[in-house]
Length: 257
Image 1 (cartoon, rainbow, N blue to C red):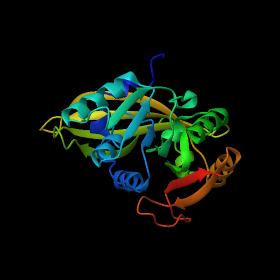
Image 2 (image 1 turned 135 degrees about the vertical axis):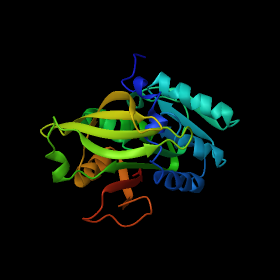
Image 3 (image 1 turned 60 degrees about the vertical axis):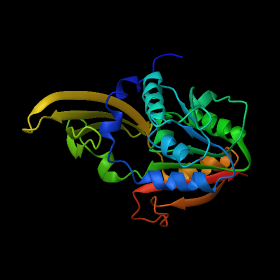
Image 4 (image 1 turned 90 degrees about the horizontal axis):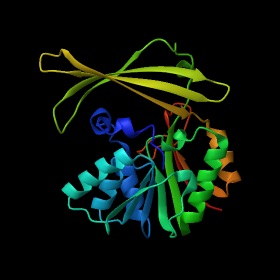
């Protein structure tokens, strides 16, 4: 498999996204309610897969980045998780072929949006459906596109947030610079990470680029239906609140029709 655009993220991913925690209890709860093993697509460094495995549910994590999986394996070894608890697989979710089925498939933290064409989305959903056991479900989350976001100036960096890594205590200031191809619904983003020392002086500046294909509510609904799924629930957040006009998240639950 060729190098992944996410390989350069492995060094900083856990520190930069250490603030993303609200989704973990949701996915762990979904896993606990599933009657069997869990498949995570786009598992990265194991941010969600490892807590699920530690809860006692057999988990298989798939990612296309060797470097991200290496980090996940190191974390799993440190926690004493063997292959019987957490198996990590290098694979492309569009071409998934694991020769087994799962009670639950999940794609946390916008992973589905990393599929940049409708054809790639359809291919992935078809592969997921074939890997779900009878009664199995799919859970994934994406952001809700909003007009203010889509009108941001592409040459302007916007302050995203300040982050303190809970493991190392390192301090980071995150800036985000995005440009939008609204015809193809592609957002190209540069994350600018400023690492600070104890005096709050910048000691390192890191640039990481990625692309996502944003999607709207009814677009996703009809895509799921066209790929043989039935929508079970659409939540507006990980607390399972109803989706409405004020929601910033779309948290989807679906099952093969």
